[in-house]
Image (cartoon, rainbow, N blue to C red; front, side):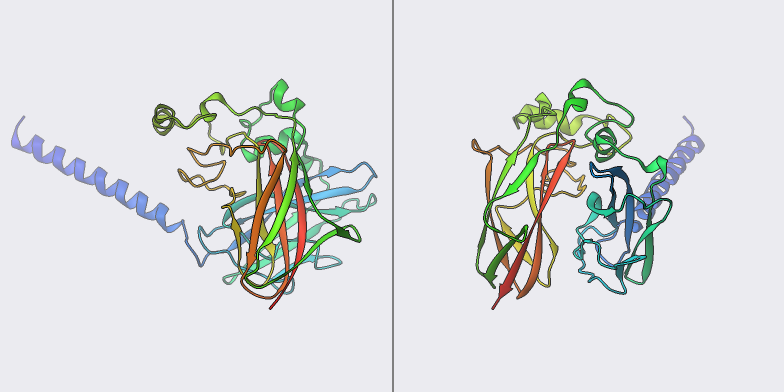
Length: 315
């Protein structure tokens, strides 16, 4: 090989290196720790047994770390009608699917329900309708969240029934309400019943050294988001003026795909042990006085069930 050829190869290698570096830099600019917008999303609708309809919404917080609190008002509202439709005012990072439901009457027809969020100078809207294209069922939910590959199903997934989450304790007019003081632990005792489906894959049942190495080296098997099946309960802040800390650390209900992120979408996540009696004990502590809403999600990988607790915190 002559010197010209060597120089040409060196030049081409450098060009490829800087092209890759430039691409990585461009992609990095699309990933934010904070300062980016929040995009509300309409997931779809389903009919309820009484003839009403549930319009289901989620959101995309473009930030990896920023978790803003956006009160119901000019920057977080529904229209037409009541601005407060039970939407979150605390926004977890990244993609959060099927986060909450808004029930509309049986005569809703072709009207739109619009959710508007303004954050970091950007205003975005999600439009909820009963258009046929947005009709969802359990298979759509399992597919969209990553339990199944896109457009696939199995006898096991079709037989799956969502977990049932039951927060223990007295209720007031049908609502679960607790009282606490700043810095005082509130014990949340929650029973989760499940049918054991979908079964965790054998490769996720244990975290042996060999299994971890195999999973780290395994290339992606699908183009859609992938999620590890397995039952978990996750408590998170839904509304409230201050910070809420949970003990033990909770599984993330949002799509954190990073390795060892304690998220079902993370590469090495393993479902936590299920208590023999199905009873989970979690302690919550609050940093500021005020009214909080805590959100409990029981998720088996394919389907989910939510419950909410209102906590009145005083000094």
